[in-house]
Length: 354
Image (cartoon, rainbow, N blue to C red; front, top):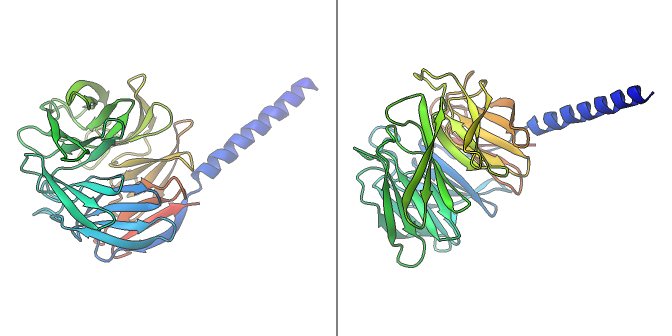
């Protein structure tokens, strides 16, 4: 009887676990926000019920209400798409909200600072490059903003800027080993972590660079294999979700989705059923990692991973070019821009949720 009772109990636990996994994976499209003609766009960022999108098509940062899914307004004054599509001179690119300001990288190698109350750009900070200033992160403790000058030649570099009055440039970190640009940075426990797709011209070798914001120095590069890191977002504990570009068109590396453990400094492979990815995000409300896969196996999709177990759950098909993705931890909704070219919505934001 004890054995039977134990078996029944274990069976119940197993069934419950399956139910939890099924619930976690049960995302669907709950809304569509029209953005007519939207074709060129980059990073999305959510802060206090507002979704901010780098909209190159309209040379602006678009601002949406995450509860009503309505466009509230635009901050204009950016350079727009580069000469050939997004290009190394397109912008806006990375976007972050700091207090009552939006900080965004632009295609003319500047950072534009906009006052949200005024709805306009109030400062332009030159980083000293000739190509776009791209992805960004913010250290709220030391008041340091970091941006990746990812397309510079002969070497990409990182620019660190004080967000205090005067917006002083604190330093530049040259990244000569980064032979295919730089991608998403994130702040965690006193340092910046930066996704580096390729090291030393070796397609199979990428890394996570560690930057000291106080000294504006490279501390080390933690090498990761067969991922080509692009998206990077802090998740549960010391884990970070990676957007692995492995498996993209023309790549010799098989698809892979992965989590990076910053404490152990190691890569945790999740699945080979998803890859060709760019941005990634963590939805705290739903307990999910979500990865935008514009070249994912089987077509454009969002990869869904259980953040507690690091287990892959499903791929959700979405319209073309879902390389940008952001989550609202208040509503649990996930925002995925879709291009007008080749799509059915004529340019829109696909909203996923329960």
